[in-house]
Structure formats: structure tokens, C-alpha cells
Amino acid sequence: MQNLKLLPFYFLLLTFLGCATVPYAPKTKPEIGIPGIYHRVEKGQTLWRISKIYTIELDEIVRINRISDARDIEVGQLIFIPYAQKKQPLSSAVRTNDDFTWPIRGRVISTFGQAFNNMVNKGINISPLNTSDVVASRSGKVIFYTDDFKGFGKTIIIDHQDGFSTVYTRIAQVFVKVGDYIQKGALIAKAGSAGRDRNIYLHFEIRKGHIPQNPLFYLAR
Image 1: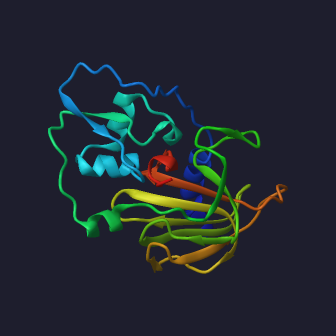
Image 2: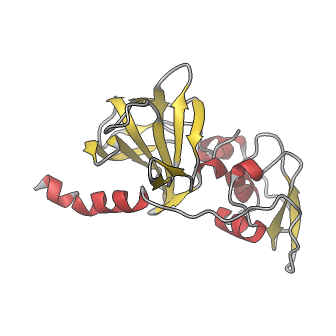
């Protein structure tokens, strides 16, 4: 009976771990015909952090600047912020709590929208370097776990209780259970393999509602 209740959730996972398309992203200063200001990107800033500074949706910044990949964002680059007049002050506590952190230290081997193993990635795949430890990217509650999700193996989903959630798949050991409240940076699992692909890496997603986001817009380089 419990498995039947989870069927709609499995369907959503299969849908959103599926495919995506990515447009071209120019690095030049965009020509904008609406009021606003330009923000000069600082070291360590993410598009997520910039959206918080100006209290504007990240999706709107991405759309109006025609950005597809965080690798196209460079220190000193000008990002247009529509209808903004000045930065909004943010406390250090807000910055710390809101930001996402890397779930594992390693090398990104497949980016958002990239074809990988005959699928188009809805997140990023990270090959671990010195450790296979997987940590919570942000504080939240574990709302889903299965030890055998089709093609992805063990899978954890953490709800961050503000419309965002994070997905961690291809994991080996698991140290949390459904219902646990996890602090940002806490150990939740070890990266592993799944299916016929014996390579060890973490598949990681950030979702807004049920819509996968490009994690590299949220993770500082």
C-alpha cells in the first residue's frame, strides 16, 4: 500500500530526471529597453545571490540576460537587473541560511542540459575527488527516500520549506531517514554507483517546485 501511495512521486521523479534544453548565452552586455540597473559580478557571487540582493526572481535575471550556463558568468561581468534602483541590504545570517553549498567536493562531469548516458541531464553529475561524503546542500527536511529508484539507485530528497528542494541520487551509504531535519552541510550519504554504470559520482538537482533548476546558478565557484 505504501508503494502505491508513492507512485505519483516516482512518476514526477522520472519526468524531471529526464530531459532539458539549453539556449545559447552571450557574454556581451545585453541591450535592454526597460528601466533598471547593471550589477557588476563580484568574486564568489552566484545568480541566486544576485537575485536575493535585488529581490527579483532568478528566472527573470536568466531570461532577460539570456543566460544558460553559470560558466558564462565572470567576475566583472555586467548583469542587467530590470526595474531595480539599488541593492537591498542583506544580513550575513540571511546570506548564510539562503545560500546553497556544494553537496560533494569533486569535478562536474555532466552539466545541466548536457546529454549523458543517453539522457539529457536535469541536474549535474559530480565525480568525487578526495572523499565520497555527500552533505545537505541546504537545511531542510528529508521528505523522500528509496533504495532502488529506477536507473538511479538510492535517492534522497530534502525539502527546504521555501518552495525549493534538492535531490541526491546514485548514493551508496545513507545516514538519514524520512522525517529527519538536516542542517546545511551535515553528512547525509556516500556517493556510489547505480545500474550497469559502475562509475562513482553523485547526481544532484535543485528544484523550484517540481521544476529542475540549473544548480550552477546556485552554487558558488
